Image (tube, rainbow, N blue to C red; front, side, top):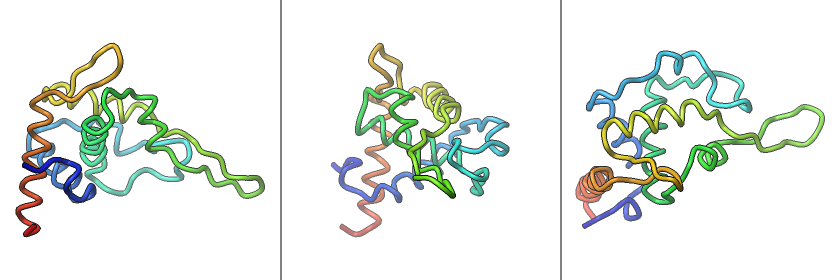
Length: 140
């Protein structure tokens, strides 16, 4: 039985985002108009950005859970490019991550605990099934 550690992360996130979109996860209206953080210059170009971020958040909760919004803001942050002085790390925006958590909680894949969000058995099963499908399709 495969799990998320046995497959390529980007392939798993792409497959999970397709499944989340098919399950009817509602994308917030503002996502098409806002940047994903203060260090970004433009809004995300991918129309399925929210689904990709939600799938990535679900994978991070699977691997590092219990985890909160603050740690994920640091995880998804990047360097702010300055023209004169040194580059500094800036955290990602929290509203997209918070809305991803809300969407995953509605599907019962993630639950809120005092220490942060944790993956539920349904979420673990969802990710493990996708991992098995990817491992079988890769021929390993």
